[in-house]
Length: 450
Image (cartoon, rainbow, N blue to C red; front, side, top):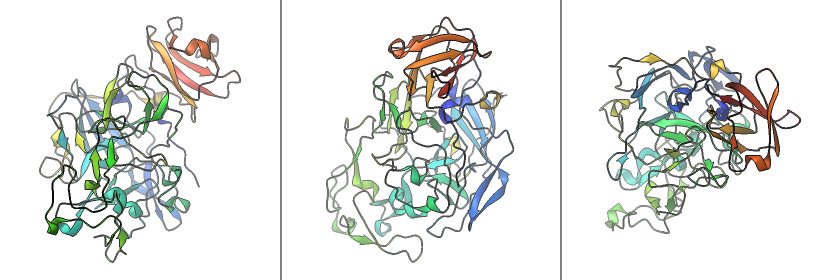
């Protein structure tokens, strides 16, 4: 049983100036509710899924969301009895992110950002440490792996969240769980190694979060590659030192690499081998070893930001399994702390402290007014494009493209040679166009703004 995959790369707003922080949200316009597996049956929930409302000012975007995804959730094979429940979130995302203090601001327990469907993300920690000493912190991507549903999510007291890239387990080349075989879900998106990954969310400092594939070079050139983290596994066999070289007292030692340990949850869990990577402190940042900085981000051109932006990436290994630090271990930018519940800082409770104390407008643009071509193998950027832009393409681009206007008239044709270095679109009229191969079977949309 399969469900339609959302074509995230083609979520294109009909506006003159692209504003991804407004147009990227998956707003629920059809009244759909969430759904979960109960035995062999999919059960509809009573609460609306995705994002309910987006409002904005010149400085902020305010997002109301239930925290319930459209894709199927549950079961949680570790016995977690909880189900996703409506959270009535109100998030505040800065529209003009500012670089924060040197070294960044460490993320804590609880939500650290929000996906475009209103579901929150957590960092790599699972709140437990070896012998409860707070020295060797458990990596949730390892210790909680068997408790994730097909979409790699699970709830904590009803707060559904993801610790790692929100793709299906069975999208991996070597899945670490077989839960999708009996309880399928389409997750938020599917990884396509031939195309730049979609914008999948925003951190609470305002910087966007992308899936794991991007342009090889920061200027948008070099084709599409897997964007690799610079956080690496340490070369250790015993856990006697921390990544910064600190020598620990014997009573603070962690288990030897591969030693059997008993997880704190679920109760009665069988011992597991504490392989390298099972603990946060098994990793160290090695500058230049990957594409990304210590925050798991970089400044680069993306389809939504043709002039470039700082962005985080949801990193995966060569098999497309989530790879530490999964999202980001610390914020690069100035954090809007009202997004945290409880004490108003990282590690707060499940809600938020956001209130709207400025004049705002309701966002009414977005994908609901544009017919989307599903499963398009390639896409154009920037999109929308002005007639002064050079148009580029990513994905499985044909050798020859035919461009038709909204009336179906051929208005341009481009060869592979034409597309090297970008195509001028100054001869196209404003409006929606279709770019297709000679047969018309492979196509994508292009918007030329006034």
